[in-house]
Length: 162
Image 1: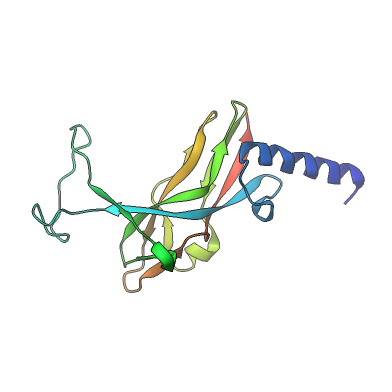
Image 2 (image 1 turned 60 degrees about the vertical axis):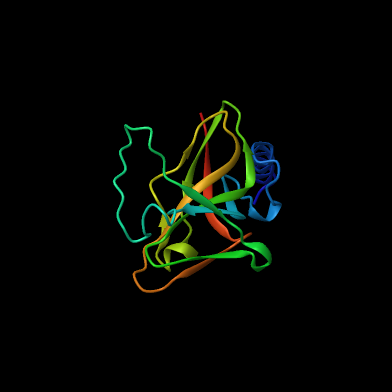
């Protein structure tokens, strides 16, 4: 790599550090960032007095109805188990501080793809967004559960200059 190329790479990494101030330097590449689970996980909850977990529920997005959710306490174990077909929302440890000149797109990582765990829908981060991301992950495996750990890489953000 030439000195000019090295200077460009160093500049790009400094720009990403400004967009994600608490990112680990080990997770930064020139145009992307590996994002990790913070240990805050949320899943759908079913109150026992209303319905059983296996009873389907009709959700109408035009109504004021909201899904109940429960925050999972990972405690000392530092992980949450995702059952076959299960879904959980994982909050990222990284807090973004995008200015108006950048947006980002979430990409799944191969370590999750290989075990059939992937995002629900696509995730775009708009210019000006500040805070952690919340990524819905589903276990598409029909037989095996998957263990998600706090601090585990759960995706990659690719940044675009507008």
